[in-house]
Length: 287
Image (cartoon, rainbow, N blue to C red; front, side, top):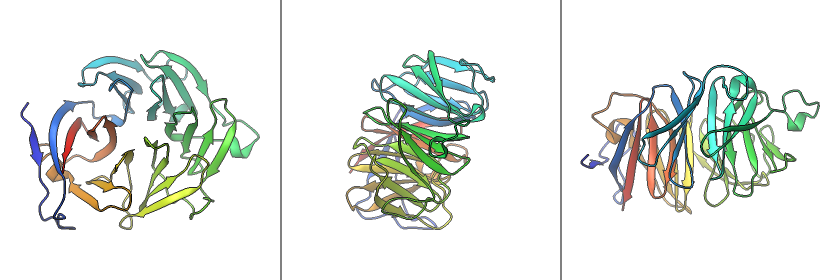
């Protein structure tokens, strides 16, 4: 497939910056309309969650199907509205929202175990409806709880590390957090309504990137020097540290596709993957 260049021109809410990078489309893979999250493994493979079919999906680095597991239910091999996915290269973690747990798989999506704290008497440890999940290189498991709208971090041994939400060390409280990720610098990224928050893995805020009021960050991913995030109708790239923020509207990313929402982002090496309703688009960034 010939590469398609997505060039940004004047748009209703902004003008392209003079040195705006060019996004060159190098990949386009159709996926189920129920796919809402994407993560990339150490070999470039994709892991996707499908909330309509209650499954988690493994695809190759080129996007071809390798496995599709789950289905509605509550046993270890079943899922109920899988809402997030993350991998450390060895294990895959899925936030199984309807079953109030995190399910651990091997890299080929064989289920291994489940982790739940909903019934614990320790309030700091508890999560009820996990909306997202992230994992660090040292094995920290980080859960975005949709019930309390807080983020809880556990060590690789399951011990409590920190909880942020109503209180954030070095920053203000979280405001409707919607997605989490750990970047390649081992920083915790939290996308919320109106901002992207960057914390260290002890729960202390490093930076807050303010967005327009009311804009909900749906997906976030970092690979130095870039921080990427999407709202329903915009892809943004920030060059760190303290660089400009570049933006592309949904229509300029793939003008030949139906006007579907942007849902998530992930990095496959230096390729930026953008998940839309029904497609995964891969872009090479050219300065």
